Length: 274
Image 1: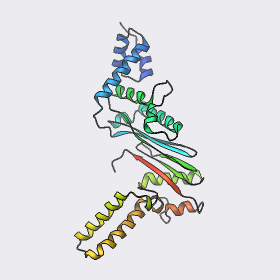
Image 2 (image 1 turned 180 degrees about the vertical axis):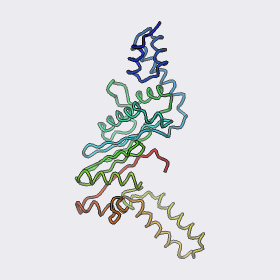
Image 3 (image 1 turned 90 degrees about the vertical axis):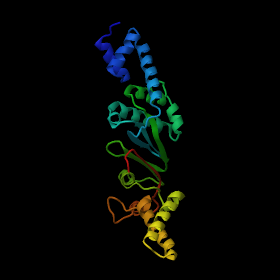
Image 4 (image 1 turned 45 degrees about the horizontal axis):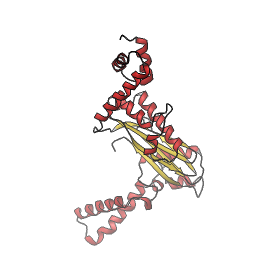
C-alpha cells in the first residue's frame, strides 16, 4: 500500500521515529495509525533489548525542587548527539516531573509510574531507545528533603545538584550553595559524614607519601591525620571556601543569614569525567 507524505509526517510527529521506519510501519499496517504505532513500539523494544549490554555514559541530567523536596534525574544514552536532542531532553524533563510528583519514591517506582498516555516511564525510555538506536536507561535518581530545598542545573545538562537546608532561606543564597556543590564537588556535608572508606584511603595515601619521602615512622601518623584534616577542608561542603567569596567558608556564608542555618543533605549528579 502506498502511504502519503502527510501520513508519514503525522506519524513521525507522534512517535519521533525515523522516516523510513514510519513508512515501513504504515505500509505493514495498511494505513492503520494505531497498528503502525504498535509495530514501531515492538521494534523499539526489540532493538533496545539487543543493545542492553552496551555502555551508556552520555546523557542528560535535570533537577527540580518544590518546597521541602528536590530531585535530580539522569537518563543515559550512548552518544552526546542523541543526548543533546530536543526529544531526549523533553523525555528527561517528563521523567523529572513524575519523580517530583512521586516525592521520594524509589527509582523502580518512578520507572513503573504512568505518564500522560498511561504507559510507564520505562516504556517511554524503551521506545525512545528504539527510535534512536541507542541503549537508554534511567541511570541517576536522587532526592533530598528538608525545611527548604534548591535544585541547580549547570548549562549543558551534564551536572545538576539538589540541596536541603534546616530552615527557610533566600532563593539566591540557596542557589549559591547549589552552585558551590556543582563547582567544588564535595563528598559530604560535614567531616562526620565522610564515608569510612574515603577516610582510610586518604590516610593511606598520606602515609605512603611520607614513607616515600623518608619521614620517621613515629611522625607519619600525625602527618597523615593532618592531611586528612586538609582533605575535610577541601571536600566537605560546610568547610569549603565559598566560591564567590573565599574569605568565608560555606558554613560562615550561611551563618551570615542565620546563626542556625545549615545545609543538611545534597546530591551532585554528573556525566562529566572528573
